[in-house]
Image 1 (tube, helix red, strand yellow):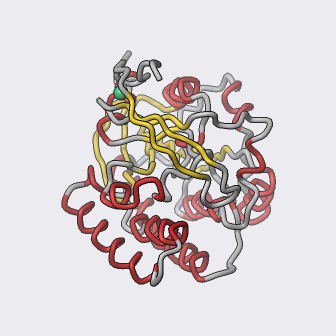
Image 2 (spheres, rainbow, N blue to C red):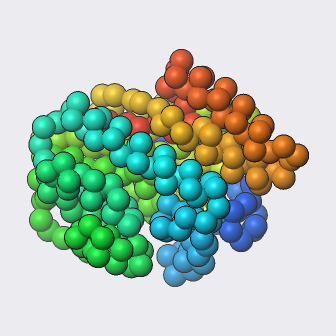
Amino acid sequence: MNVSCRVCGQSEKLIIDTYDHSITKEPFSISLCKRCGFGVSLKVPDSESIGRYYKSEVYISHSDTKKGWISQLYHIVRNVMLERKYKLILKFTKGKKLLDVGSGTGYFGGFMKSKGYVVQGVEIDLDAGKISREKFGISPMLPDDFLCSDEDGNYDVITLWHVMEHLSDLTSWWTKLYNSLNNNGVLIIAIPNHSSYDAEYYKSYWAGYDVPRHMWHWTPFSFGIMANKHFFEVIYMEDMPFDPFYNSLLSEKYMKRTMGQLRAFFIGLRALLHGKRNVEKSSSVIYVLKKQPI
Ligand SMILES: [Zn+2]
C-alpha cells in the first residue's frame, strides 16, 4: 500500500490482519505507519452498513445491561472512573460548561451535572440518547447536527471518552472541537494505545483494535503530531488503570486459551505496572489538550 500516512507523510506500512472478534467474526486489516505508528482500519463499512457491527449486548459501552460478571465489573469500574474523570477536569479548569461527545446513556454527563456542570451531549445511538434523556435529563444532539451547527459553543471542557477512534471524518471533528472550545478550555480525549504492553503482548487478538468499530489507531507519538496539526497541544497524559484488565480479559476470550481469566489478571497487572512506569506504554491514554493560537 503506497498511501502516505496522514499524520507524518511516510509511506511504509505494516499490515496487521485481525478480526472483528467481538461481534461478526469477519476479517479486517489495519495499516500501521512504520514511522509514527498511526493506524488506519482498512475497508471499514460505510455509515449505511456499519450499524450491524454495533448490534450486540457485548458492546457494553453503549448499553445498560448488567448481564455477566464482566459487565458487572464494568459498571463498578465506571463509578470509580467517574470520580477520577471529575478530579482530572478540576485540575485543569474551573469552568463548568461541558460538552461530552459520545455521551452514551449519560452516566458521565449526569454525574457532572450533579457536580454543578452545565452539560451538553452528542450521541449517535438513539436508544442510548433516550436513556440519557429519561435518566439524567440530558438530550444529546446527533453528531451530524452538532457538526453542522453554527453555534461556537464556547465550552470550558470537551470530553471524548473512547470515542475519537470511532469517528469517520476526523478533520471535521478536530475543526469543530477547536471552534467549540473557548481559548482557555481543555479538550480531553481518551483512546486505546497500540504501543501498550498488552497490545504488544496480544498482537492481532488485542481487544483495543476492535475493528471495524475502531477506524483509527494511535500511539502517544502519532496522536501528539495529529493534535499539533489541528492546533492543539498535549499538555498532560494519564493512564486508565482498569483498561489493561478489561483489554486482557477480552483478548483472552478471543484467544480461547485455558485459564484465560486468570492469565488476563496477571497480564493485566503487568500491563498496568508498565503503564504506571511509563504512560506511553499504558493500555489507554487520557490526553489533556489546550488550544494553540492560530
Ligand atoms: Zn505516520
